[in-house]
Image (cartoon, rainbow, N blue to C red):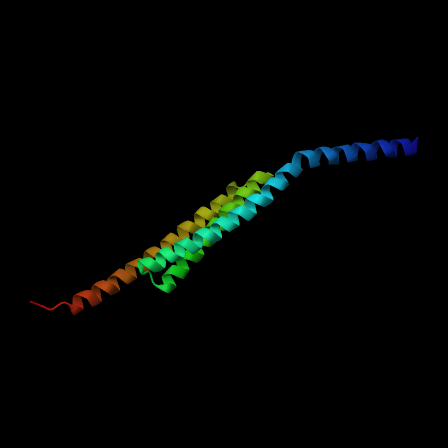
Length: 130
């Protein structure tokens, strides 16, 4: 009787495993191409964005900064999309993304204020006084 009971438990667990794999495996096989295609699209579009910024005459330092920020943000979004498809709750991670975008915006606000005041000072200094 003990061996019969162990085989019943083993059958139950193996059936549960098969049911879980049938429900979960298609999502796994769908997530991998989405990650690969998403990362490829990001890489391709970042190259296009870099060429557009170069053509517009944006400095190399500023261009590199914007490209790296955009790259990180887009890769984070693709990973969140894949994690959401698997079944993870991504709302808290989305909150982290929003918080970091807000912090970057505040940092750029201070930078732009200082940059504009420096430009105004040098611009008005170069003007002749009539």
